[in-house]
Image 1: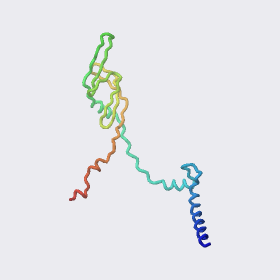
Image 2: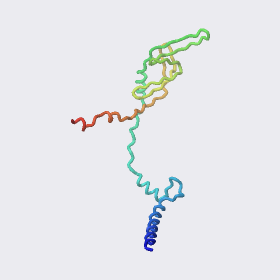
Image 3: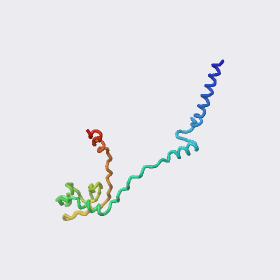
Image 4: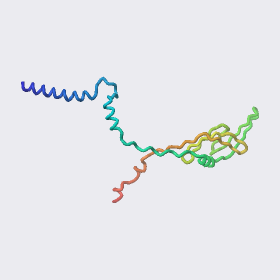
Length: 156
């Protein structure tokens, strides 16, 4: 009889402990649902200091466009005539690549990718229309940390 009494007291104690845990999460609530009181305590705990925002990019100025335009190497122009159709085709060589009127030229200068459209080609004079420029985001790597020897090893 005493063992039955001990067994029932342990069973009752177990139910009381389980009932407090049961009240925390109702199995019929939708996934991710928290009652209002739980949300308030969670929101006060989650207000940790935020990481600082990365520095904003410098805007791309007209001076950047001019520097990139001056860095282009215009090697020459060529004009071809097709006798059967009387079609004339004019090409320009920029940085060792051939472009026709209306083509788009992409060029990277000082971590900025510039895009121009070839507006006109006339007797060695090439007019470029600026389209857009985007900064190239450098890839972050831990190569410096991996290649540097430890200070403890170098003291020997």
